[in-house]
Length: 169
Image (cartoon, rainbow, N blue to C red; front, side):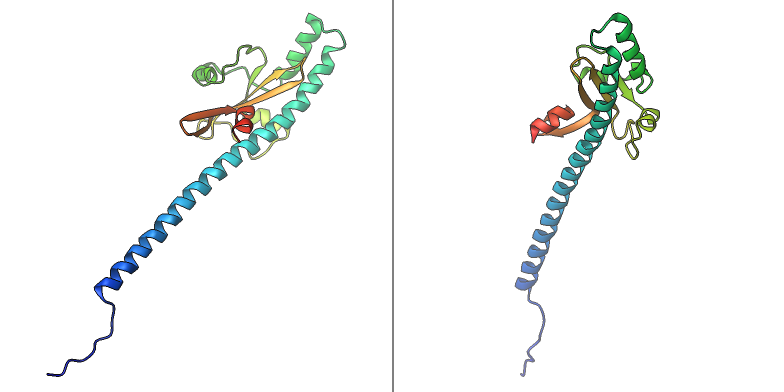
């Protein structure tokens, strides 16, 4: 009997090829997941930085309305100026706001599409899907804090403010 030598893949080499393919697929999935997470964090932080820069400008403008010696009248004028930019209509978002741990909500504003338009900011959405953006002003201290209602979660910790995100890194 003459056996012909058959050329082909043996079971052993087929198993090795399948194992290598699964390892490569697993690596690609893991890397892609990490890249998406980094991209999400970068996008959130970039949006918050853009908002912060514009809000800081408005805070400085409001500070000039206070004058050298702030009075109740000049404080009201500064508040009215900020009221024209942001919205105080966030009653249905109280649960989100509680996560921010903001004590003084007098200068806490929800940023809407109209707010972004007035500020000259494009391509940032403040909504349920992306999270609502808020800004809290300290006019006299010329400080601004930006919050996002969804925040960024890592290792069972959620970071809602720009300051928290920057300290996390």
